[in-house]
Structure formats: structure tokens, C-alpha cells
Image 1 (cartoon, rainbow over the protein chains, first blue to last red):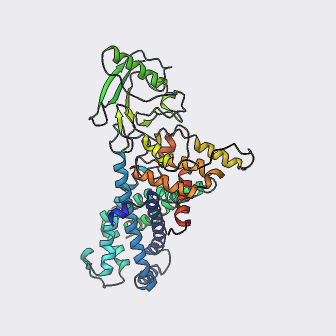
Image 2: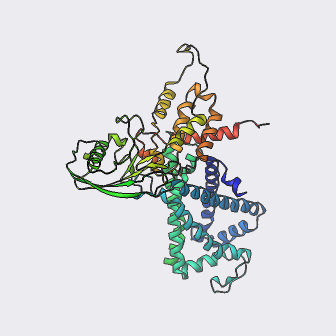
Image 3: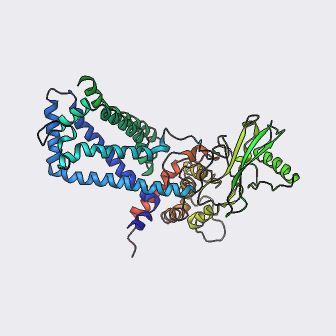
Length: 228
Length: 251
């Protein structure tokens, strides 16, 4: 199994990584769309958020899609690790003078930004998803609450009372923004979609998307830290 | 001008190499980098020391022989420059210049600054050609070629196979080289016939030889002395997908 995965052609591995990444890019938008209802953007925002969380947690199609989502995460992470290990091995002897070649912004460090996002994801799972599954009981936030449909309260509690978590959350999304800025256009290039007319637009769209995700997610803890 | 040099010295492929410090006085700013190394070697020979081994041939930027990693850049800092086209006026008086060989597992060091780039030849032998029968030349207008494609194919074919892309890439990936060689055929009618097999064979050989995988940071494009573009890599990826997805089931 391991040997057959390693022997997949380099370009195939890159394509799998890119397709899984593009799927995650779409997922981030859906997730953000719901999260933004944590903010008072609508008079019934709390009810809408709770309703959406309930729908995401109970709808059969969404539950099936959740499996695809987890598969995309796992595939993206595993193939990134395999490619990176092969890349480190390919250099052999390190240079004395680290490369000074011009590259796009922080693209050299994508594996490290990916690792930091993965660590944040573990924390995020512990604080939200494991509660939903009933693996972790509520003492995470040390306040009594009903056992289901309380994501609004958890989020509000964490962002209002846990300063360190809020800062970690914001830093994680800045790192994710940096990751996405390279990853977005990179996925298109890997799929062979490079065109003199459209590539500048894709690059710009990737940067706009990266800012949108980083700011969109960060604005939620910032709101709760200021307004409680 | 006076300069200090830190040069990688390695007796043979198996020996453990190390950096040696040298200083050179009265270097003319008009000298090429290789002429400066010639001056250093003359000094070393006069002193009874071993000269520094490095590759060179045409010294006019077309053969792809010279291959030095200078102060963190393949072929030095200049844009679209091979080492032989680099001049000492690009450096400052008293500067310490670090000279290393290309570093890639697929390019083992033979001696000092010379690396074995046979891996590129092996990739070419795997599919970097067209199969034609010998015989008299056909009419020059028998195969019409779109001018845009002809120009693009020419640009791709201007790759001199020096390996700077591999040296610059943080992953020691050869994808810029391989994609340029695939593109120079893929864009022309004569090359299209074997296109689907070619891309698979050349990529397979590239993987087998232990080159890394492109992560689209484009250091290769920034350092390529011939300005080979990463659009070639996208074309290779497209061809690879078409070959894998579009090919018939083999019995």
C-alpha cells in the first residue's frame, strides 16, 4: 500500500493534492458563510446560526458529504507529506548559502503553514467537533449548557473569555490566508490551467480569496473580544 | 579588485568534501567569473596545489556546461545569465563569494564543482525525440506549422539543459527542464504523434531518477538563464492528464 502510493507518478500526486485542496477551498466558503451568522448581521442571526448548525449536523446529504470532506482533508495532508518527504530527499546535500532566488510571497514555506493549520485543526476539532460527537463533554468551557445545538454559546464563550484561544484563532487564519494565497493559483497551475489571459485573474482572485478567508474568519473573535 | 572565495572542494564522488578559503588579488572587473577561476587555478598550480575542477565549454552562454551555484543563485545573481556570462563587476571589492556545485541527489558531485548531469540525458533518451525514417527531405511546405506554435516551440527548445532549474528549486525538481523538452515537441505536428507516450515516459524517468516535485514557487523560472517559462510545466501537466485520462484501456 505504502509502496504503491509512493510509486504514483509525481504529477498524479500533485493533481490529487490540488483537487483535494480546491474542494477544501470551496468548503471554507460554506463554513464561513455559516460562521458569519455568529455576528449580528441579521436580527435573527443567533437563530439562523443555530438552525444552520443543526442542518449541517443532521441532514443526511450533509452527513454523507462530511465523509467526502474528511477524505479530502486526509488525502490533502497525506499527499502533501509524501511529496514533501520526496522533495527533501531529492536535494541530498544542503547548500551552504540558502537560496536567494526570487519566488512568490512565502510560497517556499507552504508545508510549514500547512503544518500549523493542521495543529489548529486538531484544537478546533477538540473544541467543536468532538463535542458534537459526544467524545468531549462540556467542561471545555466550564459552564453548564444544554447538550446539543450550543455551538453559538461555545463560540461566544471561547471568544469572550479565552483571550489566548481568540489570538490563536486569528493567527491561525492569517497563516491560512498565506497558505491559500499560494495554494489557490498553484492548484490551477498543477491542473495545467495556465493561460496568458486568465492566469493573472486567477492569481488576483486567489489573493482576494485568501484575504477574504483570513479577514472573514478573524473578524468573529475580534467582534466578541471588543463587544463581548 | 580583491576578493575572497569559499569554494567546495571534493576529491571524488565518494570523498567527504569541504569548503576551502582562497583570496585573489588584482582581479579585473572586466573578467568573466570563469576567467577569475582560471586565474585562481593558475595561482594554485604555481603554488603546487590542485586546481579547482569546474565545467565549461563554449563560454558564450549556449552550451549549458557551466554550472556554479554562486552566493545562493545558480549561475550567480544576474538575470538570464550563465556563469560564463557573469562578470566580476557584479561583485564588490573585498566581497566573499561562496561557490557551490549544483545540489541534487540526481546530480551527484564528480569532483569539486563538477556534477554528473547524465540524468538529463536519460530523461531525453526516454522520450525526448521523434521517430522518423531516414530518406530524402520532404517538401518544406508539406507540414504547415502555426507561427505562434513555432515561436513557442523555439522558446522551449532554447533550454540548454544546464540544470539551473534543478539547482534553484527547493525541491530539486526537474519539471521545468522536462516540460520544456516535452513542449518543444508537443507544439509541433511532428512531435504530436508520440506526444501521449512521450510525456508519460519522460515523467516516469524523471521520477525514477529521484528528482523532486514542483511546488510552483517558480524559483526555476527566475533563475533560468534562457528564460524558460513555467507555462511549460502547465502544458506538461495538461498533456499528462490527457495521456492518463484519454488513453484507451490496455489489454
